[in-house]
Length: 436
Image: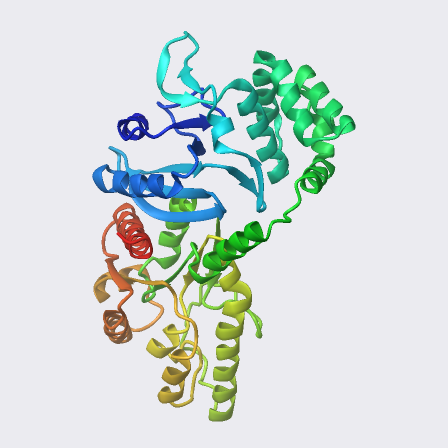
């Protein structure tokens, strides 16, 4: 973290950190909000990309969540091999819901070097108390969240410059709301403010309507770009019985969760159009006879419906909202093991259907020698395990976005390899999208 602030200072960029900074730069907890001088957003964007190239953190995601704000996701491994995340949230003028609340220049006015509890200076800048107070308050009202920790910080800043903070409140709210906020800041009791957050946000937006055609156009362009280039990720895990898909996914999803807004997990299908199984262990997946030809054709149609319509209705909105979407198995398992799914139709139809459904961003095949797979699970004969392994390898080797992970390793190493593969994919995607 210290090297990051030093890097910005070396380039002469005027900035300040807003929000709680007591533990910085030694400890990173949550997002780091920075305000930079107006007109330098694209410049700092390049700085961040260059910083990730020259230092250990890799840039894995970039979200433009407001017209003048970028949220960067950076990740590296510490000495113990554990993933660490750094989330600089950088803006110039402060926008929320397409409305401009504060200019960058006024937030940066009278910025000072941060100090610790002993009064020793730190190596980064913070906003003046009044600007810190109003920025933090506007952000919490906009997000409709204000817990005890948030209220404690606001009251602490208010105590440093109550008159200046009061003047900032009067800029944005009517007398009744201003009195409510003043009382809460002075007493430290924010309970009534929490109850009235919706009305505070409504009156705030009424005072600052989005009535500029330029702002409307910029906001629509931002939203369109988020839809066309979603920041979520769709990953499908494949592998024979005994490859450890469920165990690996159980570890990978929480490990990578800080790189996304949310996570979502599916077993085999999106679950639209047919009753969805719950992914429970099937002792003998080949015990039932295949469906006859008419039923198999109907089932193929329903699978297409589930994957195609279900993907657009269920999966795609999550990806747009920066969600890590993980599938344990996918449609293509049917191409490898049709007996498991009781498919009795022609394979050309199954393969043709597979070409018509949305594909994951990344395929992860957990591969291991048949001898090891059989020691873990013996749900099918050894010869069938050998055949399935060969089919999975052939399937994924032909995919441009497929990776093969050695699942014969211990679980920690498998998880580390999967995490690295996903991080590398995201890093390359970010570089491709942003010209690096």
